[in-house]
Length: 270
Length: 313
Image (tube, rainbow over all chains, first blue to last red; front, side):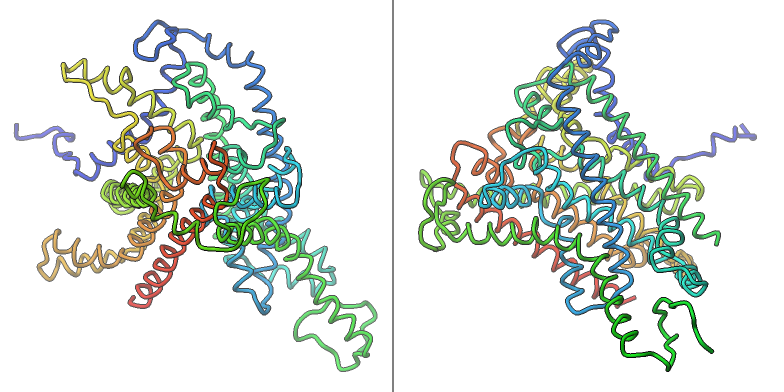
């Protein structure tokens, strides 16, 4: 009794207990989905034994796979376009002062502020009034709007901490502005660009509203397909799909955070 | 000293032997760069965001506009319709009030649950674990919001996980799905990570010497918390609350999937006006403008309050 076990002194604070509870709260829904995705019983209420049949069913589901294909195509194209436009915009905003810059900057933040539903509605009205037929391309164009903002935001935060003398040195040594941009600035920005791209890729894959309003009859993105099924009740094959998607975006998220973290460390090391 | 190679325009490196042509060229080059950098994104955002927003502003001023029908005269009919009584009830006002209540409720839940978490990670956790803890807490944010809400259906529905658990402990089952409680749970779940992120960055900057000083001068930990920690992190608290409020106000997926018929919100009403059977684009645009106005007011508060607080320190 006089020599207490080292653990006996450990009295967790209530903040620690609450934090642990909140971690459980955050991961509980994900774990529930994972659990039931291996459940042989089609009713998520009870356990009917281990089974991979929902995964098999999902991978042979034509509609689901074509929706996945549409989503990947939209996200890929939108992120490619936004990566170029967003990087140029972030660099331009960091470099130049011009009349109306405040307005321009405000416009670049708008997609982060205006609710998705309002952006979706506005884009539909715009496309309808110009009689532009809805298709996969209109979805891409609409996704580029918010992807640009997120990519530019991530790059801007990195630009503020960047060593500008490197680019000036390159210019002094006779590099053209294009060379200085491509050989000096871009490599320094690369972690931020990749991290911004991953973020907007995930957001584009996740978007339901803007896609629903701008996709024509021939295009169905994955969230649209999931939404139309989930609305009518619980579907066990959606559990399997969720697990695959959550793992996928989880890996992307960790990659993005890791790249940004490494980039920041590199920057601090200089 | 003659410069044979054409030097790029470096500020402060102007030579006095500039010819007029070189000056003109320099001027032109100095215009080309910003245009190339800022032009494409600017045009894209202007065409696909600013112009469309102005278009729904115009539509919102055409009462009862429906696609395919000739537009009527301008008027405020879409906005006065919000105050319309249906069966003696101001239904649309209730929708707006409900959206605001959901947002405020979820904001408060996020604050009270999120503050201790952010506090523990920022101040009490070992330094080298902080980043990992924060990233893992925020990780579920990266998964599809649709699937996160779907997971809550699995938990909350009458034959769901929650009631199975309650049954194990011989407790009576609860019927939460398709109620406003379910919406609050779903919203708080979705936006808690944002709150923790913002509060963390605010708490991390907290000058802990002030707390030590307070304690040296005889303040209890409680006094230290309320008189030092809270005032110092007030800008972060305000920013977190307003951000959660703003994002909640326009949320569609959570009330649609978890709320059922009892939880009509602004975003759902707008959705129905455009993609539902009503197809009243004029009224839908009016509601969208109200939504944008609500968010703008919150942003204005955020900027004003945040700046003022930032100057205090």
